[in-house]
Length: 260
Image 1: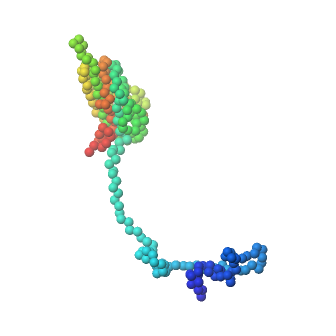
Image 2: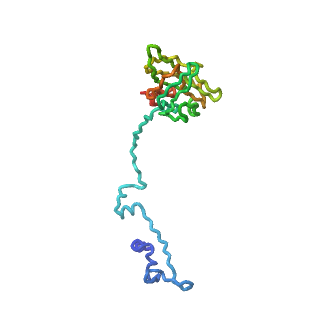
Image 3: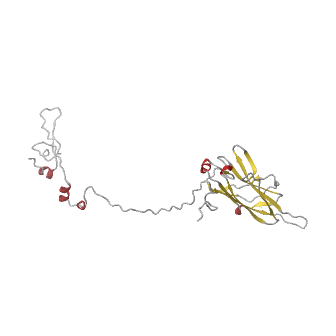
């Protein structure tokens, strides 16, 4: 029977390391001569050491004696603290404001013109000054809500000879890919919203809050704020003016956040 203690104590090359069996030089290298037929025989030791769980545990003082193999890890359920209050998912939302104060041309009530709302404060609109219905917005298949506030100031001064009150009309300009531009559009084939009279020296805010049915727009439709005033001297106030467009089925505030 093979004495495995020899290999346990001296390694698996214990027999071939014996100089009486394999002759070696002073550096421990086997002495072989190239091309010679009478070289010493090599000893190839095919010893395999096998260890069992119990033999390791009994022989080696390790912490693994406290475990069974394979080990099992007990994981405590963790409830993640995730804030799901991400605001609304209204991809239709946009908020525009005018960039500066400017005088509104007096074209008369029959020729409304697009006025400047070029600063897109919130939203992912590809255009400035116009609301563009993208494919994603059209695919929502929902009505849109338009909330518009135009604050204007009549900078004329009434004298004893002249009264410089000014009238103003608000509408939306709509451009459809197939039917073209309507300068004084409002839902339901309307023309423009009621006339507002601004007295000389007065500052007034004109408000519109309407729902635009899905049938009134399609992919590629653009909307723009339109207005007209009779006579010069009306100036838009940018800090107090805005145009907010949103999904009419969601209850969002003027900045796209869900109302409580």
